[in-house]
Length: 135
Image (cartoon, rainbow, N blue to C red; front, side):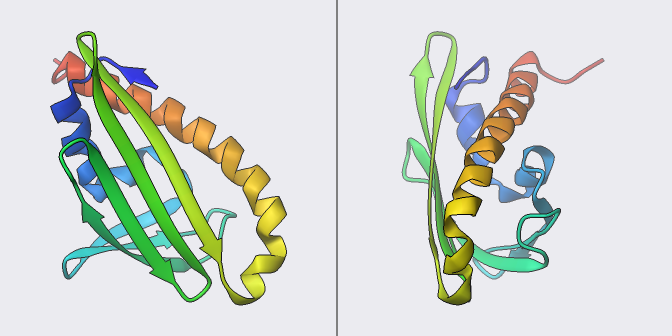
């Protein structure tokens, strides 16, 4: 996805995981938890799933690693210059654990549709950063 936001704006926005509530519909709440974040996911995805995330920003990416008794997740947003803006590429990997593995194929289909919606919402948010504060 290409956005009008600069790479610096995109990295700063993605690096604060509180912002996920604005563009990921499955996220019900985000709280600081020690050096990381706690997510409460629901809205039909995984009800009341609380995931502990630790975020690192190695210069050109934001990497969020999450763990829960039923799933391990790694969300990575790579950010690169693209003209006057930035190109953002998302790669998400997850491993279901225990009984959660049963729903794996079905959750993969839902996940692909969700990623498309998330990308559309994220682009709107990042393009808004590039436009500056509204009057």
